[in-house]
Length: 117
Image (tube, rainbow, N blue to C red; front, side, top):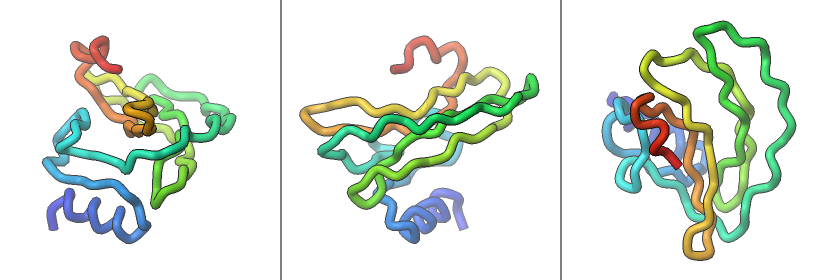
């Protein structure tokens, strides 16, 4: 079973509103690759989390609120292994035409990271 199908089934099983398509090798989302429902309200303020001590090969992914079935659901921060040549872009939310649009954390090639929003 392809990874994108597994992700879709997982999201569907949780009642999530993510749409996943494309290849798992994608390093940055686009409207055609990954999209979440637009929300009428901004997410709550992030919860306070203490990042653990990290090794040189680890990076802290801060927790974030993600839209799921019409509500904001907290996703706990986590430690991930670094990827050589890539920079972690944290999750974010921005307003667009009166709606709030969510972007999940993602890896971006380091030579392109300064161009990210």
